[in-house]
Length: 290
Image (cartoon, rainbow, N blue to C red; front, side):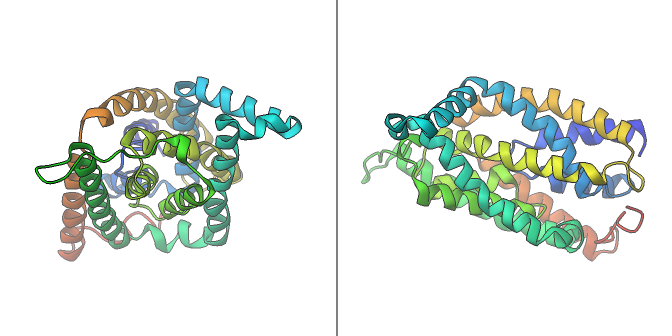
């Protein structure tokens, strides 16, 4: 991998990690369209450490408060009813599904799941799911001629059941094209949470899963055509761009609809199917050299 490739892929990772359009799919597609080798699951997981570092800094006050309350609750029974302490347990509970499924389906994630036809399918299907969830949220928030405004849930109402559902939604993102933020935000909206609550928990839930995945894949970094230098460079690029995207996205969702992302996902998925169907792009483009 050249330094230019690592710069572009780091930029793509930072731009797409927190938007509901799938960073792993875009890394895969960028390489396929440019005629580069597939960067692979290890490169993707390690560069995500950069974007998760951006989450740690952006939500540092929330994270420090939650971690502190969780540790104190281990020895202080009176702290166990504290919302922040409970959030610590809920993040742990919500991280279990992706941890178990990630290890179980590791070979599929690094192989068959990277087929461009599967990516096109997940882009479209999850785009439709996000669109439905967004419309339901909008209907509750605005009401209508014959419908009163419905109060949506906040994170203070999050329990173990919903935490696990969030976790299974996040685990779906093991398949490129699903999108970690897209799946968890859609799950949250369908369960009746506000846009801001769904996005905030989505970002917090991703921290342990992504950091663990990145550390787990460190042993495979530097193998094949991807060396350590470009991987680290891409990780730093992803961090800087990712921080800016988080700040923009958290403001965007308070007043805007997710429909632009829905339309983009569906158009990209249809285009990908058309290119593969016409023979202009191989469904396994770049894989043999990866």
